[in-house]
Image (cartoon, rainbow, N blue to C red; front, side):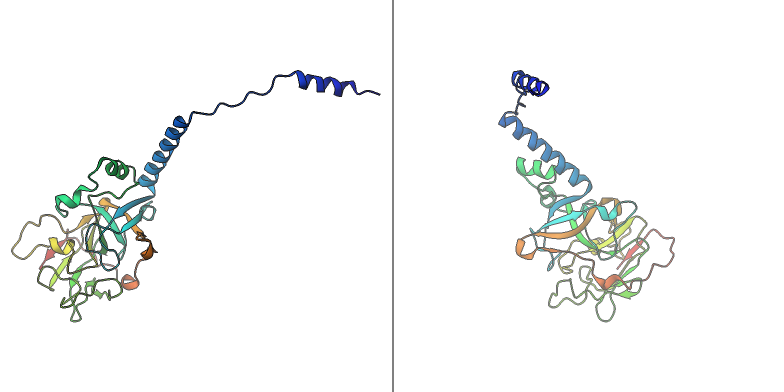
Amino acid sequence: MTDRSATSLDESDRNSPPPKQKKHLPLWQETILLLTIAILLAVVIKAFFVQAFYIPSESMEPGLVKNDRILVEKTSYWFGGTPQRGDVVVFKDPGGWLSEAEDAGPTNPIGKLMAKVGLYPSGGHLVKRVIGVAGDTIHCCDKQGRVLVNGHPLDENSYIKNTPGMPCNGPMTTTCDWTAGPVPKGNLFVMGDNRDNSDDSTMHLCTRQQTDCTPDPYIPVDDVVGKVFVLLWPHDRFHVLHRPGDFAGVPAPAATTGSGTTRQ
């Protein structure tokens, strides 16, 4: 017995037109589309998650060397999080800390475009270690040459540069006798790890003869881009950065009402 329904269905399939093939975009259009998507992803990643920078000077030696490439993550400071003592942070020049050349960043058009979307390290930023947060008082130095935060001495030998002849771990120009703080609310006191060659908060402290410090030695938390978490290049020194344990014993600052003093 013949299965007419099956025969009828087979004939119908044979007579039906073949399915339409999807048209592929021309190669040049696909290339433009892929580039557009890549740029949009790069912009989103730069804005919210990770950004590349380079080290502009010798101020963070020995851990970070001039022209090293680093990655900065921004998620640690989401939802009310703020930089902590010991963090290595990248921040915008608060004004007058960088020379014109250091502030420029990439000079060629391609480099400038790539920096805009986060595919190339940008200029106009500094990288330093957070030493004091809001309310902290920083003093240089005890008899062993150690910086004190709220009276607690920091044993920083694991990350600062050992410079022969340097009398202490926190020299400000030619002296090892200065006090900064209390750090104003919403601000940070930062120092480079190469204490003998770093344009940081100590270089902008007021002296007893000054009544107006310009630029200010403290940096606004709002100027912080994020925390350095990876030394990316050169590849033979690739590693993840961690907050050192030196700051674990620092006590909370005493309650203060002042806006911050900086005196040599």
